[in-house]
Image (cartoon, rainbow, N blue to C red; front, top):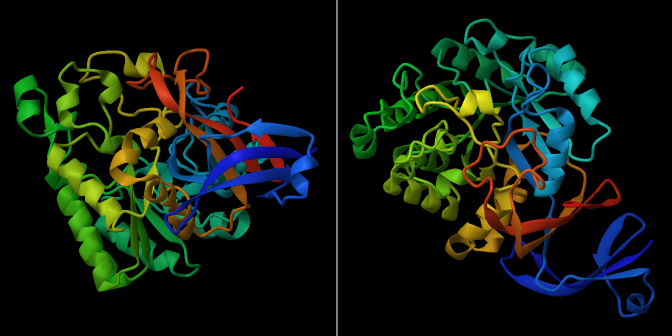
Length: 414
């Protein structure tokens, strides 16, 4: 079956946008020739729609095994498709932790019948406790894992940090680092500043992130190796990574997309859906993140999708779990940022940017989306098993239409 997409606008890496007719036929999407335009089975009016390479999310939480009621492999796959992502890196913080060949194979085998490609971030230490190493070589050689980290936890033990970097260089592995000092952040629930003082809430200082990034960069200077800093969130952290890149260290970085849209001033109503880690910081830090994206210090945008059930989230602010679902709201978030950053740069940060970081070859894929389409994020449209988002129940703008992957044209929102 051949389908003509009429007046589809492609976003390319050169920064320009081209209006072209495209045909999907025999599992491939190609520009339509003049002779093809009268030889198709179906025509789709794609006026106003945009086309890009398939999107890649480097930081995505999963509940299965152990917390399937928060997010199963099936519901995550549905959420990824609905959100335009053709590939995602899964955090190891399931129950049990993804720390062995068997744990990796369980997730990958269960996910193979779904379209999005899942890659595993294998745990560095057993139960992510920061002490004893996991079966790292076994996970790599037997199950193909090349990304390692502690997921939502930092690798705070300096000796383990140094040794894992030395270890990963044996097979060109990469350490995904959620860098902060847990002792400096202990008992904190939001950014430490005027607003936390006014609300009477224990804050997490920028220092907790800054000293961890600085220490870890010093270790990288000593050992070498590849490190990808995840959810960078402070002005000083961005500058430290910028300087490290200029110096030639093999480091990259990402930021959670919602950190570009919220600040600690949005927590005045104690909405537990806005309790995240790292916390929303001040406007100066947010603007530093924007500048880091513009100048290439920040290589990728991530959803930082962290599903939580109502019992874990809807309670007193101090007691609520951290985290926000971030997949289906990802495109609406991009739409909110488009005036400030532009489509070409935004798409780069979810396509070529993360692809350059992944030590894996990806299948060719495409994402087709309508940045003007309005829809309501509610129980009917939600693909996740969780709804911990400040945008839940609200009308949003921007909807994914199709994902093309593995030779299939898949409707993203039906």
